[in-house]
Image 1 (cartoon, one colour):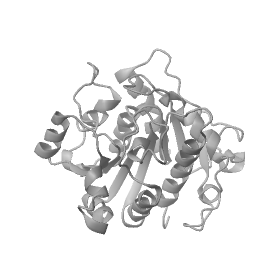
Image 2 (tube, helix red, strand yellow; image 1 turned 180 degrees about the vertical axis):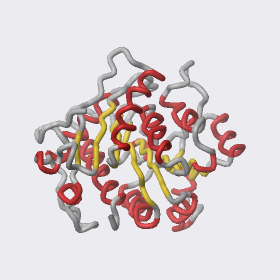
Image 3 (cartoon, one colour; image 1 turned 45 degrees about the vertical axis):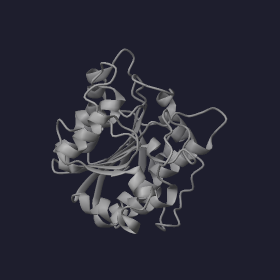
Length: 298
């Protein structure tokens, strides 16, 4: 595995704080795009996040630290998929994720379409078999297959549930799904917090506490950026209205970091739009905020 130089890596860090040997955190780029269903461009997501991250401040006033210098963040060269797809593409992601975890790294996977999360989650489950998966998303992604492909981004959580008990999947912000997905949530006991319930105050001010209560001690977060409201995140393939906003999202991340152990995460489905840098920057800052939350007290 080869890390990137300061001109290309996350935050533009100098080699002292971005070498593979020295850094505690590793950014794994998986620009896989094979099963888009509406807008395309997710293959450009990781590169756009890295470029935008060069304008994110090192100092975080909420956490009052420069995490990147305290722990170091290395960024690996982007995986090449060439003719790889479906199960072969997932294996191509799982292997380096597994190796990084064995080396004691905290792994952040940048996609690409949401399918890549199945590989990252699989690698993390080997180390934390009892972990909860927290899915921030507009879609439940529970279709057994979509357009004939069981490895579609619309089926990623169905693949995850082949290895994870349903009660250890927590979904937040869901607001678009088919009838079969809704019925599976009810039948299998998946912990789903629908977007309309959050927005209409069904849980009052306690929805974040309810999410926290549904999570076990170790939590992996798979963050599809379309879980955010399109008013702040328009650069994604299916920008569904009624999503999460910035402050409440960061509050949830901070609560998880304080009361649970975040063991890894991915950020996926950014589809950068030329001439519209704000969503790219938001995604980059989100990655850094999530890292700060994950290392609260560490």
